[in-house]
Image (tube, rainbow, N blue to C red):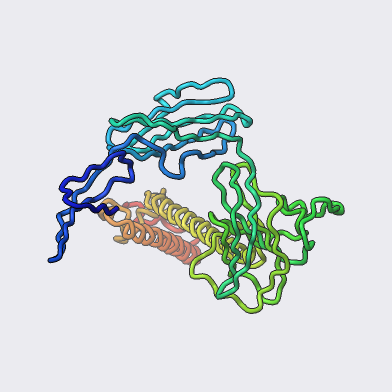
Length: 410
């Protein structure tokens, strides 16, 4: 804004509005030149008003599902802004309890719980500051949610990748996302609500969302927050059908937007990152990969079980061997005459108390036990053999042998 005049040292501003705020400077000029003063900032304080674009909004509701409705205003000064809400229906207008309101700065949020799917309600948001009260409230219309509209004007772009770009329709009052289904094979050329079909097949039972579009299950599905999709997995030389849906909490658009006979001329450039694919019906390649992973998991599990069984068997064998050795270490009953003969010949079993037990090392215990057992068996066999030889020699020389004086003395 530029104002000019003669001999004016004072500027008077009247009927100021919010748009009058800004920086003001005074300039003077004559035949010799021009000079300008430093700028002065003028602030215009005003009562709260709705933020542009939020004067009236619509929100879809689901029965017994809480909604968080937001109201945002502009005001100067921004400090100390207070909010209040009113509940308006076809019968009356009532204030909203403060317990359901949460405010911070220039934003207020209210929690609302719809009581039915057919309820029509308007919530009014009011704000006030030191200048005054908001003259026109911000209105939020609560409407029954519905299924979103079908995306429209879908186009194909085939540069380095095959890209599908559509325009979004109405979201039905709820947050929506977009779904692309890729179907192989030939389908009807257009969507027809009155067409007839034969009896349901096994494939039909697997498809719950596209029975009216094709007889083949989708090869894969891609879901995005905006109606733009990039395809990297299509094989060249094959015809595909693309189905584009809009989806929200109430369901998905019906009918979808159909793109028929999509063919890729050459192999597409693979993506740098994985696509967000929701594949309820995996492709043969995915199935093969899953089978390999399953086989590997089974082999690892079998190896772990075999190792555990081996450890258990080895533990049982070692425990049994140690138990046998401990039993063998006990002093076995021996015939009194054999013990006397062994002592007479100066032979002592290592199990006697004269040899200390090696309990410090289990391995030495096992060696000692084995040596003791072998020694006993050896001397038993040797003593019996000596007795048999002596008996045979005496029977040949003297039928009635005299008693062995050495044995009697002992």
